[in-house]
Image (tube, rainbow, N blue to C red; front, side, top):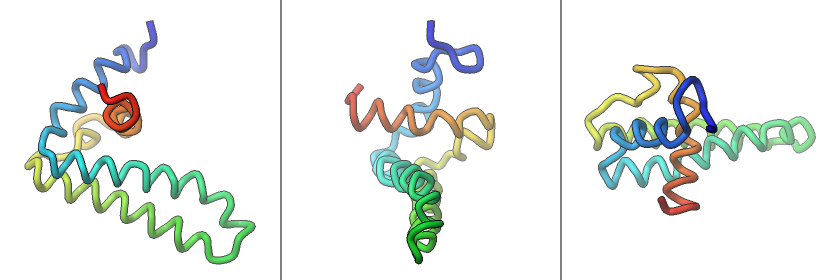
Length: 102
């Protein structure tokens, strides 16, 4: 069984999904999560390419802004305020909703 902190990934994603029901929130997360991930992946390259760090910072803050804007529509706080481990679940949720269409 593939577990993460005592729950299966499906259990984490199902619980995360409960706070991501509104279509506007889902859209904000479907755009914001990849922006955050892309910013973090590109960050090491900013040491080689001049000016890239501005794009990385911009994407990072845009991604997080979209996350919080989405939760305004949802009228619920982000799950990671309740349990920090949900910071690791968002990407898995995005993958299941955007790539595998679960």
